[in-house]
Image 1 (cartoon, rainbow, N blue to C red):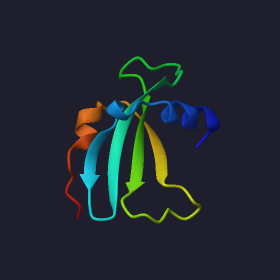
Image 2: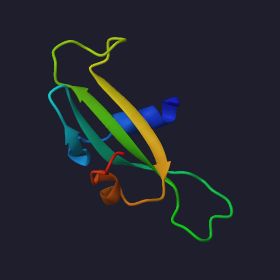
Image 3: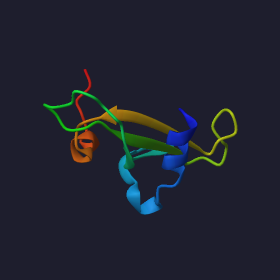
Amino acid sequence: MVAPRKAEIAQLDDSAWQIYREDTEAVLECAAVPYYLQEKGNQHREPLRYVATRVRNKQVELFAGGAAVKHFAVATNEALEPLLRPRAVG
């Protein structure tokens, strides 16, 4: 992940994160990142924005590499709520 995006995600308040899955090993949360991509020719859809995912390990030991939390981000034009709904696998 590029440094500016990582900084934006790090600045998110804890209240911005919504739990979308939890199991015995980790808590997965997501949040809308207040950063919008600059696009040209985007006339027929909502603008792309970033949604961040945070994975917090419940165990005392850390992830490989020494991090207690991992962050991921995707660019999407979907609302955050549909992304939180469980999806069928298979």
